[in-house]
Image 1 (cartoon, one colour):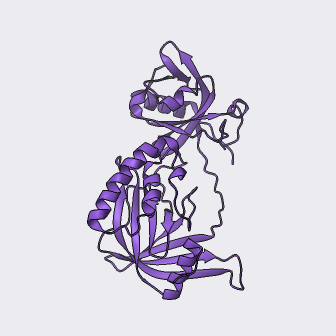
Image 2: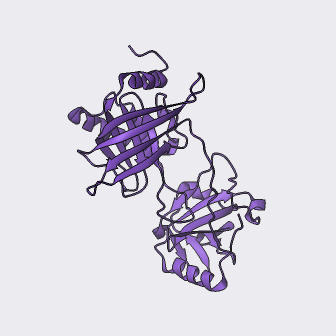
Image 3: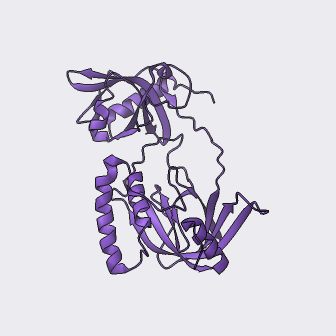
Length: 310
């Protein structure tokens, strides 16, 4: 897809917007030869490098188009001398530019180049072995449904492990876990509690991806599923789940073996608890099944535990 640069007038408006402040950005180190290419895809310098989100109060922009970083996080200090891709939203439109992270007597600095470009989302067609849809009726009797797909990097139908949480986020995750375990002992609504590891992982992960358009409706993320519950996550502040409401749930499985290529499980579920991140940017709905065919429950149990239902 062709990348479009902003016009001169558009660039001036964006530059003034950055100077006026209150603009959070994300910074990702990239290969030098990639910085001058037209390719839309980010090529990090290392698979261990993640985009870093900078708050508005951590940057200042001069009228000459120079960004100075104030008290940047430790992870950004290593970007000095590297080319980086800087992404941000302007009037809900995702923009980016590439430049070099330089060290100056004032600290780390970025020179805003002439070329500021619009982010073009690349639609990647994905086929999932498992996905779901949640349905509920509105007050006007209309039926609303939400698509749910596996969260990227989460292994479903497997016992969650603490080591799946990034090391730098484990301390925060531990605080969440201690809080949620204490609440579960009082409320008795968490079952065996295995899903809490995936919940803590999701709540501590930072939303750094800047998209073509801000606020786009996305499928809910499936974080955990077994024969008793399904846990869904969202980084949209308008989370659809509410206490006391029952939801219809359709789960679709692709089967690797046998004469049938897929299987659908129809159930109903209800909210056991909503877990929210401290900054309010992420939420998880822990839902328990309220009705399900016994043969379907057995199928999910065997898939999740790799053993026969007793």
